[in-house]
Image 1 (cartoon, helix red, strand yellow):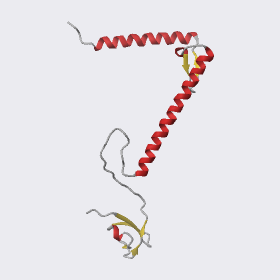
Image 2: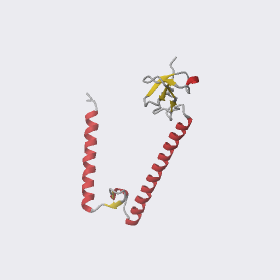
Image 3: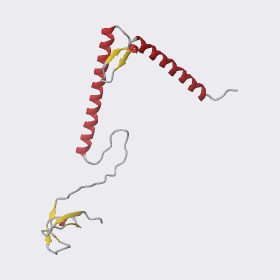
Length: 149
């Protein structure tokens, strides 16, 4: 049987640990230096280990209901905030498209997250990049196919 470890602080200044049954956790222990009785003190660190079975793709039960609820809440808040950011970006993009009378492929996303219409020289570079990307995709597809005899 493994006993929990408790911390004690002696009047001589020595802090030490002793193992004891839970029922004896509040009883003073003899100091290893001066042999006086030292009272228990709150632990300076707490550690734990949870063994749980994986039950599916959702968040797992850690054994601490409050922690599980907080993790679920944080995940939910993050998802909600992400959806709000995406919706705001789509709205901004649609407004620029409507105001400027252009399609989405003529827009550029700026570092600050706003959108602007591509200048003619930027559109030409974009078209060249798309052609290069298309040719690279074709090359990759043909290189992956086994030779047919």
